[in-house]
Length: 157
Image (cartoon, rainbow, N blue to C red; front, side, top):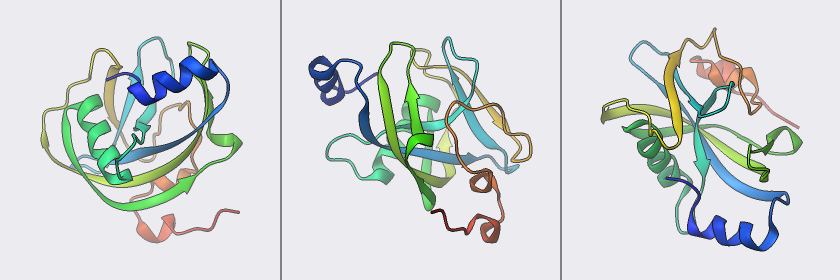
């Protein structure tokens, strides 16, 4: 699914101006502990399975929806790995739309489903080891990829 009616309406009013957007991203691990990344059409960098929180959705519901739409997998958000915002979470899409995300990153498990990219949105899906994270468009601290819970516990100013 592309942009929701809410965000399309907002973009019609403000064009490409910077928008503050609440979002979610998932550390979705397979049975080997590898993390799922997606690469969109016409992009060379990878990203976590992620998206905007829609009106009326909880962050966990948004994560489940985004995973289904982008991967075909039914996932369960198990805990929050971190919440990130600020200039490091700014992104300009190929169409010129500028966003600054406030992103809630969930640790997720796969419950069912068959991995298949949404060909309208994702070009490629691939699992990577936590020690071989691919080049990413969005910036997150490396600690969120650790499978060791005690390594993930940290304070960000």
